[in-house]
Amino acid sequence: MKLNERAVAEIEPPAEGYILEYDNNHAKAVPGFGVRVTANGAKAFIFQYRFKGRSVRITIGKLGKWTVLAARRRAQELGRLVDSGCDPMAERNAGRGAPLMAELLTRYLTEHALRKKKLSSVQEDWGLIHGGKFHFDAKAKKLGQPDKPFNGTLGHYFSKMQVAAVTRGDVSKFHGSLHETPYRANRALALLSKAMNLAELWELRPDNSNPCRHVEKYQEVARDRHLGDDDLAALDKALKQSDQMVAAAIRLLLFTGCRVSEVLGLTGDRVDLRTGVARLEDAKAGARDVLLSTPALAVLSKLSTEGPIFGDLTYSTLDKAWRRIREDAGLKGARLHDLRHTVGTMAGMGGANSFIVRDLLGHKTLAMTGRYVSKDTDPVRQTSERISSRIAAAFKGEKAEVVDHPKAGRR
Image 1 (cartoon, rainbow, N blue to C red):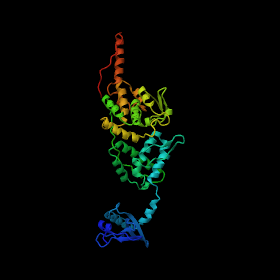
Image 2 (image 1 turned 30 degrees about the horizontal axis):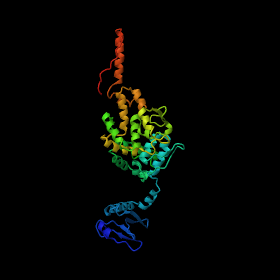
Image 3 (image 1 turned 45 degrees about the vertical axis):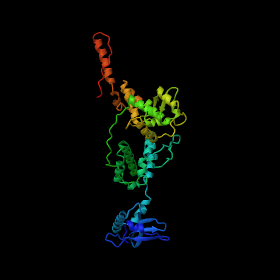
Image 4 (image 1 turned 60 degrees about the horizontal axis):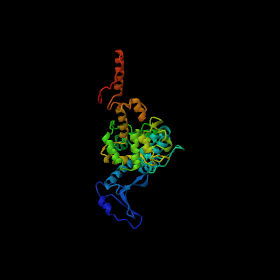
């Protein structure tokens, strides 16, 4: 029969076994292309061919996932392979034992990330691959089992693909699907690129075949938002109507200036409420002590001091809750990381110099602190004015009168 959507839909299933109906009696018919219909009504497209004297039947795919037109085109492609001396069935069987991306991503986490990266960075990689709560046995220094394996942005897209079969087109399409979150898209691309380099090292792909090469990253525009007094008042009101564990985490972010991963990773044994110090063993710039202010201590005093202070609260859960809270507070577009910007900005506005801001926020260098110390007043200018006034007064044999230089404004 001439196979089309209607004809295939009207084929009645046999009483038992299966029947085959082949495409013929029209100009575009493809020899060997047909549909298999089983007794339970399942229908799938097939292609039958001869190779080295034997008859071979290969399944193209099920009706529904494949249209008649798409299946006919696939049959034409298979026919061309046969004509060129290839056996499509043999190649398919050979590929079934090929390693999948799930295996590569797992090896990436256990054999690379866990051995060579900071635990906070491993947690970020875990989120891209598996999503959900980060499971890590600190005593055994081993990763646990994910709640939903490969449910992260990267893992969900690639885990079922064969390592050797991933193309630049696949990577470009994946990266493009994340265009609304360019920072996350670029982090995922970087992780994938490293995994593909390791695939070459582990002989899972040919040398110099990294499909991430030449996939252009998105330009990341540094955001510089901080919350003002009115914003904070609105946020406080919204937090009072929110889940108290979430509210506590957000308040602690503001009262400490810590990163989200640092706050969510706090454990009771690392917080000393008596001395007002929290010890961060795995901070981004290395282990450091966070001096806890009175408001921060008030938040922590209401939380458990056993194990993880924020329980199983994950970044994704907190971020999802934050999106609702910011809408309630009228803070459209504000990110969790902007809470950290708020702390740095207020420190700069209060006259703190770069060294103080660096230590407050836990930056590794002074390069990141310049954005904060010139928001509203310039401590360097103030210091220069004080010293110059004193020296000028000394020239005259007078005592210096220390005055503040007028605000220079933002540069």
